[in-house]
Picture 1 (tube, rainbow, N blue to C red):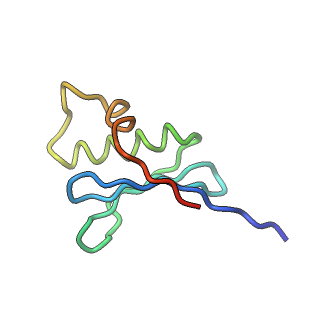
Picture 2: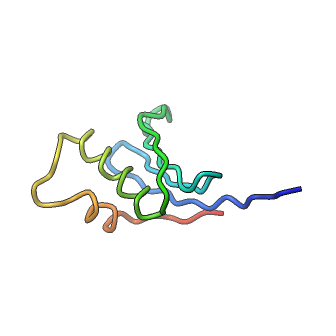
Length: 85
């Protein structure tokens, strides 16, 4: 029997909940609404960093588009990600 331990991170950005979690293909990024938890965006990436950037980028565009003073990479680094197992 194969047991996979899930590892993930969550954070909030305005009224959105961002999460990244391990799965069988690498890392899954999701962005959900804060109100009803509806999934607005889901993507798979090969690394934790890439998954965080994908979630941050989607959240930034949902909040009004590209921010010239902050890249998605910088936003992903500035979010306070809470780890869970």
